[in-house]
Length: 127
Image (tube, rainbow, N blue to C red; front, top):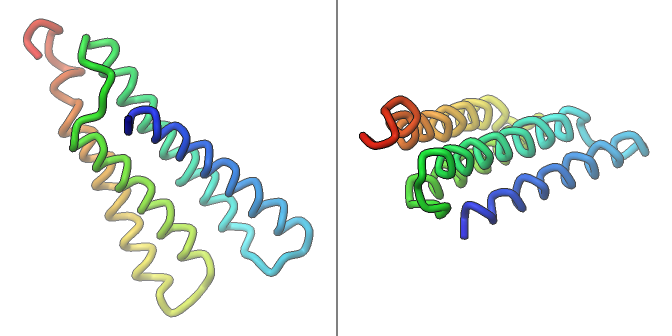
């Protein structure tokens, strides 16, 4: 079930961010910003969307199951985080990766607004 899987993905981002930070502190040749973006865009972004979708579905009386659009926004936020972390490694692809990450992030949270805005704004029986 994507509604549960996304929580595990958020925790995986937390582990990855902590591991990258630890490696950086131990002297590995990694940009510290990679760990920061794994923790923020990856862990925080994924968990925020996961909790918002789960709480909304529960509070408005919907099935606690992710539909296709919900699954898509989970994929988009993870892709946004992945491209943002990749952009920290300073290649000639940095700017295209930053732009792609921003577009994916906007698509993920915009998708949440499209999928869940009506549920949150209308009275419970009108949804």
